[in-house]
Image 1 (cartoon, helix red, strand yellow):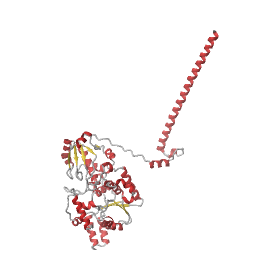
Image 2 (cartoon, rainbow, N blue to C red):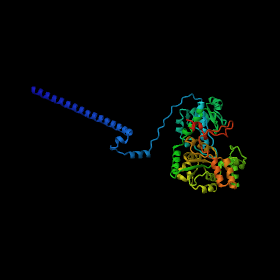
Image 3 (tube, one colour):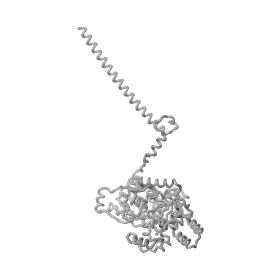
Image 4 (cartoon, one colour):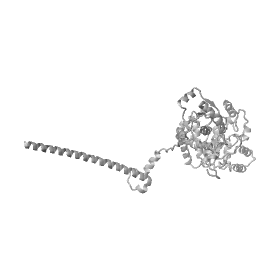
Length: 496
């Protein structure tokens, strides 16, 4: 009996020992896992700290440490796949919304560009919500491009959020009303000051909730506006209106190709069919071409002037220079005949026949079509505004910019080049030049006399710091705001 009890006690003791061992093993395992976990955390903490130190102190601290990749490898990978720059968004401006402003731009790319800047400033001043502008698709160029096909729409909206609320489309309820025709549409008065928009347009917006401005070219005055309005026009032009990444990259590629061969001049040779038909300038054209241009002018009802005396207009300096005249003038200015000249233009009227004299004087004429592969421009074909955007980017980067006519591109590029540090833009005095050319051709002037007179006349017409010429009540004749936005530029005699 006692022996049995003794055996039972021994068995119970052994069982308790086994349980105790099991508990100890479990605890040991837990300690091991905890140690492993703590070690992992510690190791990763050290790695993170070391990486931070490496970025802070660079090779001085870690140059002898082994690494899975070298700094050169890292640089290569960054060059191949650059991280997109972080956009620091300004805080949203909070204001009571007075309604919605829709706008339909008219004209070519640069006319629309200036108009968009004006309309943003107007929307800001009226405390309304701006709908992303509709671009012109019905003019001579018939370009179907939407805003987002040319400009970075998200950057446009985000970069201006501290000034004005911009939407890609109307809210659903109002969009339905517009589709039913329940909105007010009108063309604003040209060259209006801000009080016109405050007293004439704002009440319409408050009454109808949605107002559509169906014309936007030159609808805001050059002068007499509050400084903050002028500076906002500049901010939109030089910062918010950024081209799409596709256009920007192709523009950089063209500039790279040109830079590899040295300096280059951009010639904005505005000798295209639409300009000649619109202006009525036929100097150098044969009878058949002159008739074709006249028919085209009558075919477009929004071109108001129909009967035009080409000779009188040319003498007054109101015609674009011909390719032949341009070649003479560039030579007279002392431009190196071997310099690269990039032609920023569409198809030159008269083709190679009219370009022959210019090409003989300056053999290194190039265009985007000759610098790029056809596949590079495939998506830009039949999109004249996108093609013009490429020319705009190359024009900004050129060593010298020479426009042969003071149209919208010439003016807007000139102003942008001033903003970039008063880059050289030769502003040709066409009224003087056509008379000098005629005198040289009929033998009244020798080449030396012709050249010295041309150089002297343009010595100070190179886009240097200056103030706009203001002509009260004659806005078409005074200096255009976008060609010289001096309110936004640092002039030589004053700080910004």
